[in-house]
Length: 513
Image 1 (cartoon, rainbow, N blue to C red):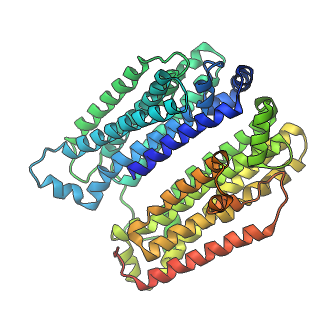
Image 2 (cartoon, rainbow, N blue to C red; image 1 turned 135 degrees about the horizontal axis):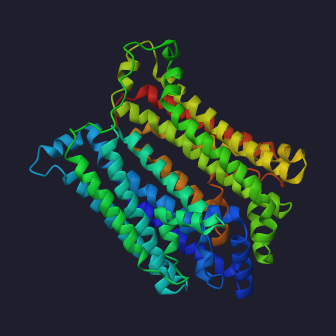
Image 3 (cartoon, helix red, strand yellow; image 1 turned 60 degrees about the horizontal axis):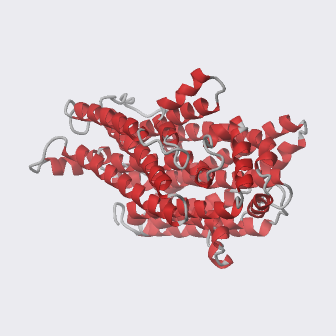
């Protein structure tokens, strides 16, 4: 997993830098793009500020400096929680604890592994960026900025693992902390007052951008990230020695002795398991949809370079830059929504390995009915997320232009992303039914499809290779002709894969690999 994710990070960073050379070939074009970003508070809130408009590296990596740091942070959260709290849940920590090792050994090992991963990622990223022709010093600064965010959130995850009583809750706590600091960074960067701009310095993501790679290379900022990580890691270690193995400092509230009327069916139980996460995702998608609708009005000033206009139009749609922008961003929202579907379906494997599926299947509930309860949540959840994104974008766009018909154009553009998202959920279901040990391959497939979609046109890959991604067959609405054939084909593929997974589940052993 680590090798694959590091390869994706390095690959995306290097090719983003390489592509920018063609998008902004002159100094004037780079300054124009940087001024357009810095002149829009919404864009600054999402991506951050370009601190040196004349620097090719500063313009090229504006998106990856902030959004890329978020994914690096999540990688560290998953890594640390997996080898601390998840090991306690599964009983592996108790086995290793019986060996001659200290009480803090698992926590120290997980944190050390995360730090090592971050340092290797920094080195490889710097080498990849320097290979594209960017200044070596700035490339090293960018790699260390990513590493600083990763190490900081490895410590946050270690602390969350001491507070929560389950791996799922620990990941949620760390993810919530990441969301908070990202918002602090966004408000601080977009604020017009000097007082509010200080909020950036309360965020590890903000520290990464204040490193200012290719725009001054402020090396001392790394000490801020490392100092924060040391303090949080020390707090996690202090809490680890004060709690019992398997317990958390935030105890869970015990449930009632008997289930209520709302838990009489497998679907009701699946809803209870997934409702909290779905509500959080829904709030995020509604906010993102409204943000996209607001950004659409400024897109013309951002893409004033003819080469950029040609690229965005080719990737996002056929009619106008605004339609192309909305099509591209809604397509990305569809990819993120598919991650929710993958998360829900993989919960089936967690229920199975956690021995919570067997008591349920010992009743009159069959395997297919149990699996379908989670599938319904996955499909309905992705539909809700895209409806909120499309509805929010269409509403804000309509208010912005004074044309209520804009909502009717934007909303379907979000819904056409659904068949591709359903295919991703069906892939995970097929793996769960046929080879459950490799159910995490769904995440690898999503990463591969994203790379094909984002970098395939820039790398001029063969069309047949890019067509392996289900997202490549989604109509680029609004602004492009609509054909029902690819949507029906994607739906048929999802049905076939899902049927194969359910058939495999009926025949294999529960708890088998």
